[in-house]
Length: 356
Image (cartoon, rainbow, N blue to C red; front, side, top):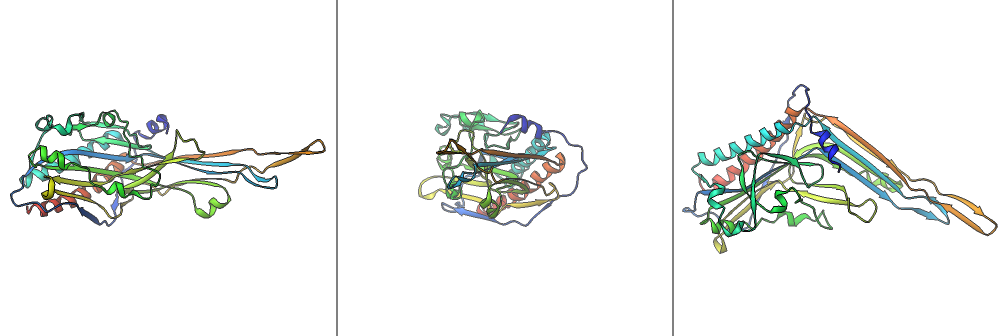
């Protein structure tokens, strides 16, 4: 994805703010450990608080040459792209800051003690880590996404992530994303912090649905991107820049979860909360679809002398890109409303587990 396209998408928009509505949502918690004990430590360390926001998406489809006795159609590639105009980076930063500050305030109001990065910087868990803090709104290594870190967040991460080079790129089978459900091994960190509670929060606001219809794909290359704004874990695709095969796409699994870890060994507390399905958000992005279809050029055959026939196979590429305008304030408010709903639900579960 070209940086210039992403830069174009992150601009101010002076449209009138309209109301947005959250759809119904249900959460699920996977417990991998025991329940907290009555005398468990009430110290909390926020290991990460990451927000991903989608602003641009591309889709590509490729169909190989179809040949029968020297006749048919040449290979065809179809490309489609859709981006948002009006996304305001400063407003997204403000709403991310609001989510984070209210999250901390809710924890403190229940009697939890929040540990600072200075208190944990010398533990062995962070031996190979580097300092990482906000404010930050940057282009993510996950194509088409912005990455946002709260202004008051201060912690540690890998050097690769600090440089913005770490992505959530999946393997060969993106549909089998069970590995993304596994909990990060932060119980080790908790042990080194005298069994403090360690929390990781990930939010992902996305709007793209890619891929043309299966039926249309039978006749040629069919690429499509359409809008459907929601908060939740999402697998997104993007054309591979390093792929050797034509039309290759890479897949990225963007997490939306709330992970808690405390202690280690047989008595460890570990759970992960997530949405059963994304929270739909209406009234923010106008329903928009961009589609590209390409059947491929018909092969042309001609005689060379009396004995030889030559068939010309000419590849074809179709491209279709579009931008849809959104209100920057309304879009950032959608992030806050949906993120707040998810975090509040997860905090209620945490408070119940610790009987607060």
